[in-house]
Amino acid sequence: MTAGLVLVAAGRSTRMQGLDKLLIPLCGRPAITWVLDALAATPGLAELVIVVNAENQEAIRTHVNEAHLSIPVTLCLGGEIRAASVHAGVRHLSPTIEFVLIHDAARPLVTPALFTQAMQAATVYGAVLPVVPVHDTIKQVDPQGRVMATLPRHQLVAAQTPQCFRRDWLEAAYARVPLDSPEITDEAALLEKAGFPVQTIPGSPENFKLTTPVDLATAEAVLRLRQKGRQCSA
Image 1 (cartoon, rainbow, N blue to C red):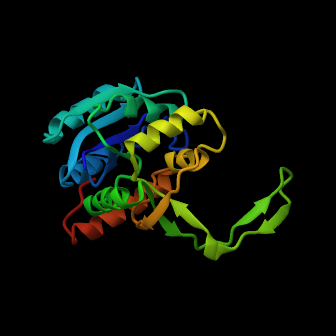
Image 2: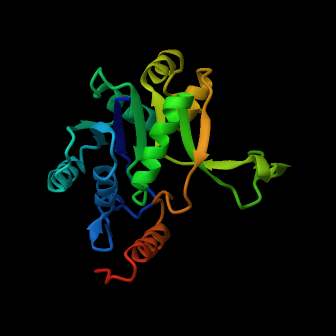
């Protein structure tokens, strides 16, 4: 397989008190550098496209240059919504790319093993996403906040990235489904809406998304555990 990865780094971090969460230090290093480390240790990737915004593109370019990745790296500007940003990244991949990995840069604790598992599963199923079980009881509510139903927890999972798709399936989905459809919250939903089957694989509880300041403290705790007690600089 020939696989390329679109790393989505164009978000505005609206719930992170005005700070770009990708550039916030985790154990003394910007969060995005932990993702770049995982990519550098992942075999089988042919190229990388990083989707950025106008404010963080130069900082991210600097971190990419310092990472000395062994594959070609392209930076491109994202769109107004996430789906448009990912689409922009896919368009910048070489025509020879057969499988497309998509990962949110705001999940800095991703591992090379998860990238590899997603790629391998995609060669079998065509479209895959990692998931983790839902432990909370999930309620469906109406616009006034009244409970309409309690959803069966054993049938629910939380979607993660990296997601991986056959390039031809992904391109066909883009041709069939408007990017601004409210149902398109990730690329797996795009493929589902276009009629393609999507297979789940086990994700990881550590592969959570940085959304609020509390997540930063949790991420540092995980990194400390991974570093087996080595001193973590502020």
